[in-house]
Length: 346
Image (tube, rainbow, N blue to C red; front, side, top):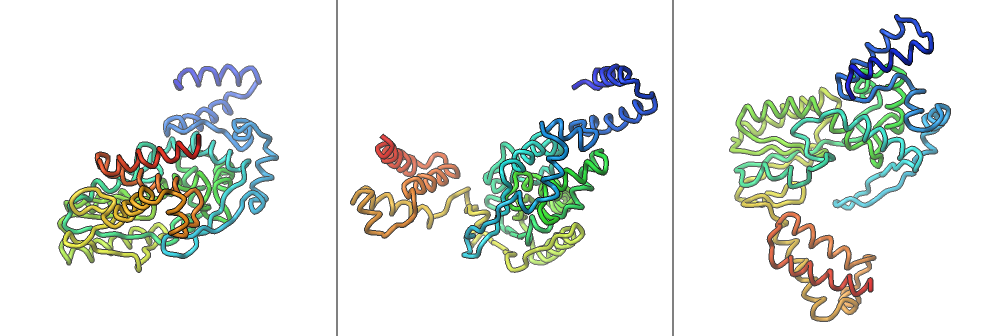
C-alpha cells in the first residue's frame, strides 16, 4: 500500500461524510504511525470487527466469556509429567489466526529466535552449535504462562494501536491473563516478547566471541567458554530474564562438553548434526523385525499398543532423514515402510 494514495483516498472519503479537517488530520496521524511500523491500519475495535467479518457484539461476547471459548486437556511430556493445553474453539481460533497472519507476523522478531518462524526449524537452531567445545543449555520456566496480558497491551500500543483496540487484541490472545498453550497466536507472541531479551543476551554473547540462539523456551550458548565465563554468562541470562518477568528452570541448566554427548533439542551436535546412535539403533531394530516376521506378527510379539504404529515409525525415519539427508540406510528404510503404508491403503 502506498501512503500517498491511502492518504488521498481517506481524505476524499472523509470529506464526503463532512468530517472536520481536525478529525481527518488526527486520523491520518494515527494511521501514519501504523503504516510506518508496517502493521495494518485499524482505527478501533469496531473497525477490527469489520475486518474480521463479524459484529462488534460478537467480539465482546467472546472476550467476556473466554472460559467458554477454550477446551482444556492434558498431554504427556517426554519426562512423564503432563502438559496442560488450552485450545480455543473454532470461532476464537479463526480470529487468532487472522491476528497472527495480519498483525503479529508483520512485527519482526530477533535474529536469535529460531522457533515459530517460517523457513526455520530445529536445524536452523542447532547448526550454530555443532563441534563446539562447550555448550550451555538453559530452560525458561513456565514460558507461556509467564507472559501476561498487560505485556501484550504494551506491545500493541508500541506499534501504534489505540488503547481500547490494544486491550481487545490482547484479550483475544490470552486466557486468564496469560498466553494459552494451544492458541495459534501464543508462539509468535512469545518471540515478540523475548525480542529485547534475545537482543541483549545475543549482543553480550557475540561480543564475547560465542554463539547464542533461542528455540522457544530453550536457550543455547556455545563456544570455547571457560569455567569462569560459564557462571558469568548464566548469571547475565538470569538477570535479563528476571527483568522481563521470566526465570530460569535451574534444574534444567546443563553444561555439555565436547568429550561427552552434546544433545540440544533432541539433536546430537558433537561432530555433526545427528539423530543419535541410540535412536537410530531402535529404529533399525524395528525395521529388522518387521522384515523378518512381518508387520502384524511384530506388533503382536512386541505387544505394541500404539495406534497407527507404522505411521509413527515412518515419522521417526523421516526425522532421522531430516537431520541426516543423505543417510542411505534410512533412505532404504523410508522406501520399505512407505511400501507397507501403500499396501495398507490400497
